[in-house]
Image 1 (cartoon, rainbow, N blue to C red):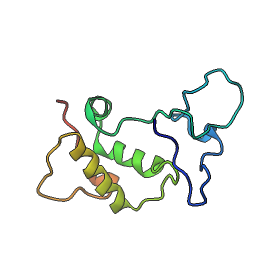
Image 2: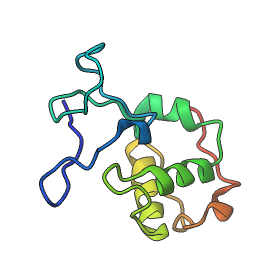
Image 3: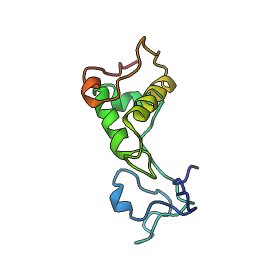
Length: 120
């Protein structure tokens, strides 16, 4: 099972799960107040496949781009440039079976507002 990414210092970057309300460990439910560990199972939103398409197909790509821009990567939310997020978005779409267009994806929310993922 995947575990939270480690920082460059070799320590977990997750200090307070209250900062990550949509990402919680599932191991040891009801174990009381404790910090997550590397042995916990982590649940994150799907980034490919049917679950991904179901979650994002009715929304403009700008919402997904903004989510990525503010919540990813897990160990450094907001740490990627707009172009890196656009490149990552293109990769995620490709992994879900969407064909590349003739132009690169825009690297701003405003330009992605009119684009949507079609349901399959």
